[in-house]
Image (cartoon, one colour):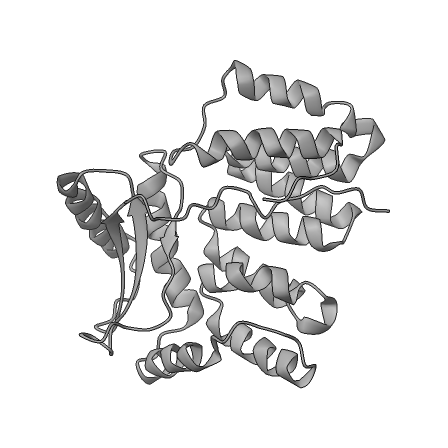
Length: 264
């Protein structure tokens, strides 16, 4: 993460990033958390969009997701730049609100709006595949530099189309998995993959990482299957969501994309 300009908002974001990046679990509303809220208080009157942005992230990491979303949306309404656009999408994903994250990308990710490049990784994370594919077509016509992902992305879309699986269907499975994680205060972390393995090219699996022993991972997968049945979520032979054990190479969403650099 590049050093940010020394502002109240940025110093708080860096402090929050350091705390979150050390943990695979959501934070507690402890003294340190309340101290960060107090440090942010001057922003409430001086730069309201930054206050709402900082509070949105602070609420996110203690699982107060409704308040977090309200703050992040207000920050975006007050200052419609890349930063609030990015923070809201990241907050929705951390909260496990993947359908809303897909909708947000559809609204703000179009290449001609200017936020496409910074939102692209999060579009993959929330599985907004169809909209992303159409936006990549637009970006290519505009000669924008983008990662070479369109071929594997189209391959996954073809597989899902053949079996009648929508991006919203995928999001429903992912939201159920996020609920299982929340019950244990574990943060949402995904292993990103756009293609099936060589051994199973016709199977697309989304893996959520959990810092637990194999026996507990097994229990979580059983719990997820039961929750999907309870919620009457449509299942498929070619698509699945599962929990896997964490390892040192796993990359966590730690807020490193978040910035509150001074904007006028």
